[in-house]
Each structure stands twice: as structure tokens, then as C-alpha cells.
Image (cartoon, rainbow, N blue to C red; front, top):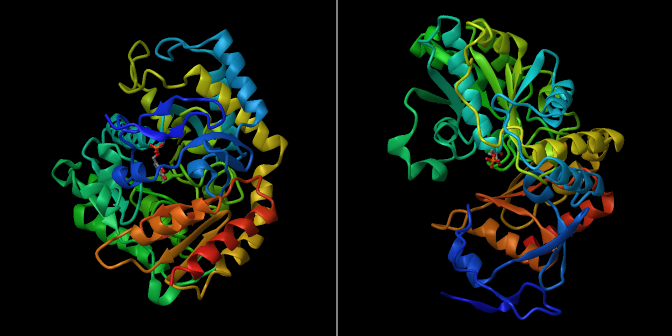
Amino acid sequence: MKIREDFQTDPASSNHPINLDPLWLPFTPNRQFKASPKLIKSAEKMHYRTNTGESVLDGIAGLWCVNAGHCRQQIVAAIQSQAQELDYSTTFNLGHEGAFTAAEGIANMAPSGLNHVFFTNSGSEGVDSALKIALGYHRTKGDGQRHRFIGREKGYHGVGFGGISVGGILPNRKMFSSSLLPGVDHLPHTHNLEKSAFSKGEPLEGVELADELEKIILLHDPLNISAVIIEPISGSAGVLVPPRGYLKRIREICDKYQILLIFDEVITGFGRTGHAFASQTFDVIPDMIVFAKGVTNGAVPMGGVIVKSEIYNAFMSGPDWAIEFYHGYTYSGHPLATAAANATLKLYKDEGLFERSYSLSSYFEEAVHSLKGLPYVVDIRNYGLMGGIQLLPINDKPGQRAYNIFEKCFEKGVLVRPAGDNIALTPPLIAEKTHIDIIVDTLRSVLSKSA
Ligand SMILES: Cc1ncc(COP(=O)(O)O)c(C=O)c1O
């Protein structure tokens, strides 16, 4: 086994080298990473510290999740005391107070009518759960033939088989294309480089793309369609903001044919767009919201689905001795996750972080758009505290340009996210203007030299 002698757990004292070989890193070019590893030792608020002692400003809230900043004491303390008191208890046939409190807290933040919460451990499980809830809902109503799903090109819905089937990011699908769910169609994506490049906020062009939904529905007969799933803002595709009016039109078409609308708010949830959910920001209420990430500030894995009462109640209509939904995870509503969620939701409220995100968004918008004109920058998009800078790909090496920029920014002490040929920026909601300046100025200097 290969042991890198030069990477110590503690540069000051340890002589214990880290063996990089056994770990298979997800969504990472492993050989490239292991040739030049970036190891994180600790974190506090806006910063990471590497295991060689350098400070790195976190421009992406961990991975779009650490919305309140790192290692917040209120969340750390809640997890510690929960681990002392109740390490584990199932939510199959049992319950513990923290799980009910977390469900209530999340439902209270959700748009009106979405009152019931099903817990999972990740966004991917949340997506697959939502798809199963949609199938089950129609079946309980005697509409079991409604089994088709509609996703969208460039959509990211995690990595379960359901999620990659409704998702529309090619590299995530192509290795598994023979094993995707049958009965899935995709809406066209809404990114229009010719007409909408460098739009600030919602692009003005493209609302008519929503009408493609009706064409797909009519192609299959509406009575065969279960649900439409979309991210209000596509995150992993490089921050694709919906054209003005698009989401409302999608909602109207779903209503017309009694098709469920699922918003995947794994990234957009918990303040990223200036409200608890993007649904509230865009004033469009879906039938289900998938959440994860920011619900625990990234401190303990957790995800879930918030559903309308009508959906929950439909499941509650059979005999009351029977299990209504044959689905769930050993760790659904895990005590550590719910303790983290309860502390996180309180912190968001106490510190007014969603309002803070809203008030910082115009400064952020101006800052990211100031990168226009730099070498290889072909588009810049933003909404709330989400920014995407699209770069011209290197021939035959998709993603490599953004990866190179990510590496150079890291060397300069700033973490940005390569997403295909885009750089995504999603700072924690506690960011100060000076942090935004440092992130953007670092990118400016790296991009300027990339010519
Ligand atoms: C919109 C969206 N849905 C689902 C997921 C999957 O979440 P997880 O990685 O927790 O499974 C992600 C992850 O980034 C996401 O952005």
C-alpha cells in the first residue's frame, strides 16, 4: 500500500503518516487528488484549516450545506449532549422527542399546506423517497397507473437509481444507462447562452420552455403521469436560475392534470435564496419538498421530504392496524441528526440568517458579475447567495478547466466548487462583505492568469 510520508495528521507533533490508498473518494479524480491531496484538519465559522496549518476561506459552505458557518457551538453542544443521553433509537414503532420537534420545526418553516415530514439521511434518499411517495399516493387514490416521472435536463437529484433516472447530468447517468428507471421523460433545461448570458437573477427569456411539460404530458396521456421533479434553481449544473414566470407555469400545468410537483430543495433550502425555501422566494408551492444539507448545517447527515397534508392523509386512509408506507431507513430521524437539526433551525432564527442572506444578495450579485470579461468566462449567473461562473471547456477535457481553477484558488486559501465547467460559489450565510471580496478577488486573480 502506498503511504504518503509527507501528509501528517498533525504537522507539529505526529509522526503518524496518512495512508491515502484505501479511501475511494466520491465524485473526485482519485489519482489526481492523491498526487496532490488537500487535507482538512479543522474548521471554524468561515474558515477551514488544512493539516499543514493553512487557513482556507470556505466559499461553498462545505458543499452547499454549512449555512450557519462551521463548528457553531450551539450545534456542537446539542450533538454532544444528545450523544450522552440517547445515542440511538429507531423511529420504526418508537419515537423520541427530538424527531417530533425537528419535524414540527421544519414544517413550520415550509410553505403553507406542507405539514408532514418524512426523514431520510441524505438528499439522494430524500429524492427516492419522494418518488416512492408519489407512486404510493396515486395508488392509494386508485390511480396506480400514474407511474411515469418527468425530470429535467441538467437536473441533479442525487445518486440513487431514482435520482439519476430523473436527473439530467450526463456523466452521472451514462455508466448506468441500462439500469435507469423506465418511464421517465425530461423537460428541456432552461440555460440559454445566446439570449440570457450574464443575466442578473432570473433570466427574462425562456418562460415558454415550461410549455414543453404539457407536450410531454399529452404524449403519454396525463393519467399515466405521477410527478414532475425539478430543482427550483439547478445547483450542480452550475447555478441555472429559472426564467421569470417559469416555475409558476410548471405549477399551473401540473394542477391542470393533477400531477404532483416535487421541488428538490436540497441546495436551495434553508436560506440560500433569502427565504427558508426557494418555493417561498418564487411564490410557487409544490406538493412535496425534498431537503437535506442545511437542515443540520452539514453537521450530521440528514435529509427528508415535506409533504402536503393531502398526501399524508391519503396514506392514512387504510385500516389503522396496517403500516401505511413500506419505506424507511434505520437512521430515519436519528437522535444526533434531529438534535443537530433542532439546534440549527434555532440558530437560523436567532441570528436572522435567511434575512441576512437576502440582504447580502445584491452585494454578492455585483461581486460575481464583476468577473465578466475575464479569460474563458462565458456566462455568470446568480440568485440569492448562489453564483455560477461558466468557463469555456478545454478541448476533450470536460471539467478540467474548472478543476484547475479550483486547485489554484485552494492554493491561495479560498475554496470554490468545480461543477462541470462551472465554478460555483455558495458562501455560508454568515459571510461578511469582506469574505465575498476575498473569494471573488482570488477568483479574479486566478482567472486573469489562466489566459
Ligand atoms: C438538488 C440536489 N438533490 C439531491 C442531492 C443529493 O444529496 P446527497 O448528496 O445528500 O445524497 C444533491 C446534492 O448535492 C442536490 O444538490
